[in-house]
Length: 121
Image (cartoon, rainbow, N blue to C red; front, side, top):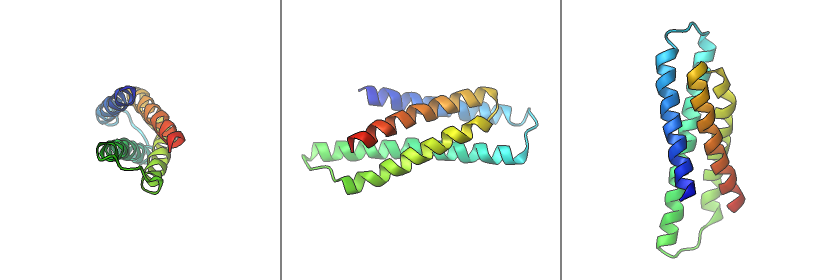
C-alpha cells in the first residue's frame, strides 16, 4: 500500500514538474543546452516511473498465478529504473525554480522506490 502511495505521489510530482516547466521555460531566458538537459531529465524520469509500473505489474502477475519470481526478468527493470531515476535527479537541478522542486521530489521518491526494489531483488 505504501509503495503505491509513493508511486502515485511521484507521478503527480512529475506531472506538476512538467506543467511548471512548460509554463516557465518560455518566460525565463535559459540557454538551449539547459532546456535540452531538462527535457532529457523529464524523459528519464518518465521512463523510471513507467518502468516501476511495469515492475509492479510483473510482481502482481506472478503473485496472482502463484509463480516464482525470476530475478533475470526483474533485474533489468530495476537497473533501468534506478539509473534513469538517478540521472533525472542530477539533471533536474538545471530546471527553473518551481519545476525544479517538483522534478527533484519526484525523482527522489522514485529513486527511493527503486532502491527498495533493488534490495528486494
